[in-house]
Length: 136
Image (cartoon, rainbow, N blue to C red; front, side, top):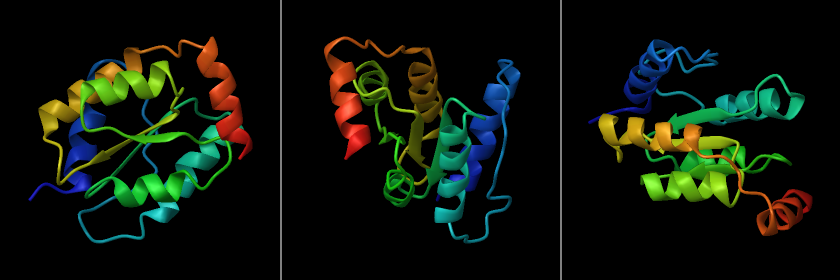
């Protein structure tokens, strides 16, 4: 069974190979961990402006999504397809991509990540909705 750590390691190497700077805040092994700490760390980096976007990975992606979305200004999107990734950026201006290592294969995850990174926010009618989401 694929773990979040294995998927993180794979995607981190792929991003570095493409020249993207990667700041890895953990987890640092396959051992069970308290993933909300990592969601908080990534959310804090984004909210402070030290990072524009982040990636969170756990077994299903559900726990990380719940943990990250509790922070104001964070729009963490659990994506299982390239379409989800595209729409989460284009319409929702997601700033954290969440993936599940046990439910999304490596190649699909890389394709989802690539789509997410390459898709700009459309703004326009979606801007008002993002602002309403961030205020609640």
